[in-house]
Length: 234
Image (cartoon, rainbow, N blue to C red; front, side, top):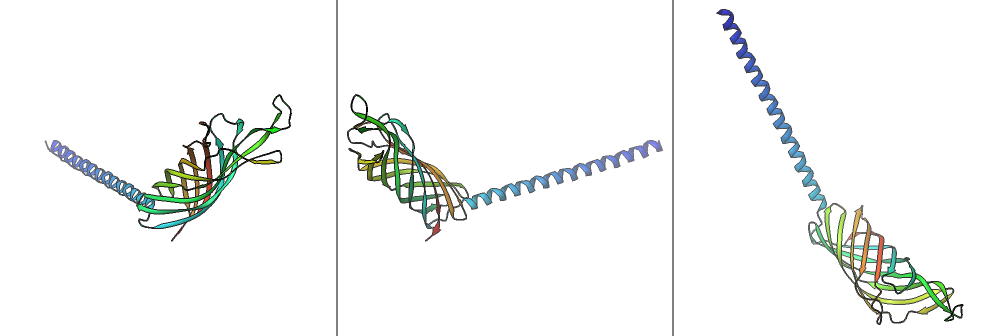
């Protein structure tokens, strides 16, 4: 009987010890979970703060880069993309913590490369096909909504009215005006930009909406731009 009593007491002690160990382990797990949740919350808060745009702040950004442009439709023979320059200035106003409105003025060299007829050449109609540049230069006025999901990264889209200031065709040493080019153009720009230490790398695609020529239904601008700028607060 005494042996049974001792055995029973030992079992109770063992049960108590196991209970204490389980309680300690549960408390430790709970503390670890709480710490993990606190770290996650701090990380989310940090990202949220970093993504914030200063409300009411106006910034200015001179920028320059290159265009890779073409003209849609089948109005040009053996059409290729043309590389041109783009430069100007954009301003941005912080409307909300993650949202800004940008507007700018850019000089943009657009157009395309293609084959063109040269008088006095060979062929049934007296024309020789030569490589030519169709140069269409514009003053672009982009107006963009910019959303900042994380610090430095902006997703942007908007509208872009433009005014043609030059329309020349050049090839084989000759230059001439391109007839019938409309003076006003309208496109929809979409793109991304990333800011690091006030330098901003921007990539956007301008989708041409209005036709380029007065008497031709086909032919719209299609331009991809890559620029770098420096942003500073006013």
